[in-house]
Length: 111
Image 1: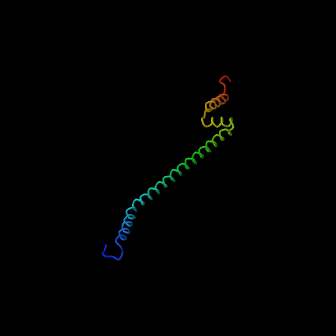
Image 2: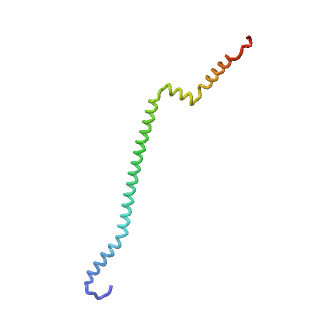
Image 3: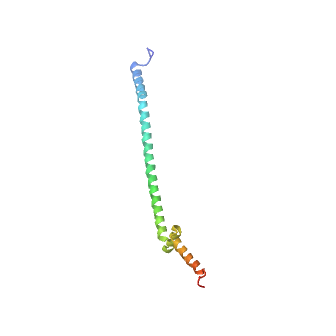
């Protein structure tokens, strides 16, 4: 600072010290602001995760409910027939019946 000035030295020293204090505190305030923003963003992230989990839980309950309703609405006889068609458990019975019918048309050796 250039001497002599028209302003009292104590005033210039007070203004200079307050400016140095503000400049010295600026990085700390900036980091505090960054940390606060990061904490807020993390909080929103967890809120969205919980909301998504709740929606998935509701969807799974609805899907299970629909499945149970479909199971209870199926006719048991139709279900047994469909199961037999899918598993092809009646194939041996069908072949035996066909063989019986075919052997009944064969000419008898005694005729």
